[in-house]
Each structure stands twice: as C-alpha cells, then as structure tokens.
Length: 166
Image (tube, rainbow, N blue to C red):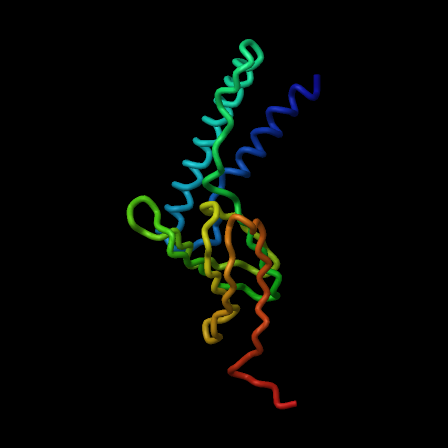
C-alpha cells in the first residue's frame, strides 16, 4: 500500500530533476539550444520506446522484428569542477545545428566543487576552454562526445600574473 503511494512521487521527482536545464549557463543562445536539444532528445526517446514495445509485441505473435533501433543522436555530458574556485567554461565545435549556428555552449560559470549536466550531440568533437579567473589564459582540452561522458575540470596552469619567486 505504501509503495503505491511513494512510487508516483518518486517518479515525479526523478522526471522533474532530469528535465532541468542547468542554471550555470549564462549565454541566452546556449540556454535556448540546450532546451531544444533536451526536448528533441526526450521526444525521440519516448517515440523509440513505443516502437520497441510495438516491435516486441509484433515479434511475439509473428516472429518478425520490425524495429531494431537507431543510433542515439544526443547524450548527456557531465562537467565536474574540481577546482577550489569558480570556473568559466566554453565548449566550442565546428558541428552545426539545424539553423546554421554551431552547437557551441558558451558562458558556463561553474561554482567550486559543483557538477552540471549538458545535452550534446553524439560523436562530435569539442574544444573545451576553461579558466578560473578572467586575467588567466584559457586551458584547452579536446573531447569527442562518442567516448566521453564525464569531464573533470581542474586548472593546472600556474598563476602567470603572480609567478612564485622561490
């Protein structure tokens, strides 16, 4: 009896938590692009779920498998700030969105020891630029979203403006 009452609440909380767009993105175009990718990813996942169920039912009665599934077009990418300071992050690619703009995700302000989830296209190379202060140079790493699901960010460059005299 208690399980029947708790299950809908737990599922609602899980769905609510998975539908949020990160508060750490400050660029309006990047926020809008994230929302559109999330909506498209959710719609495709729901549609594919129905196709899988229908194909499974059809295969039980006829032995034919109608739908095998397609490759995933979007995935979640997790960014972790391991630094003791806020990081300023930009993800830049040469891969284009439908309306001839790029899949860039700009102006992410990630607080210390926090993580965030992004929706990114599958199999796309990104240059990840990050720094912990405006007066420091960007650190750069290249990733491909086909093989990367988590990025741990921690600046390693020494402070160029205040070099140690030891």
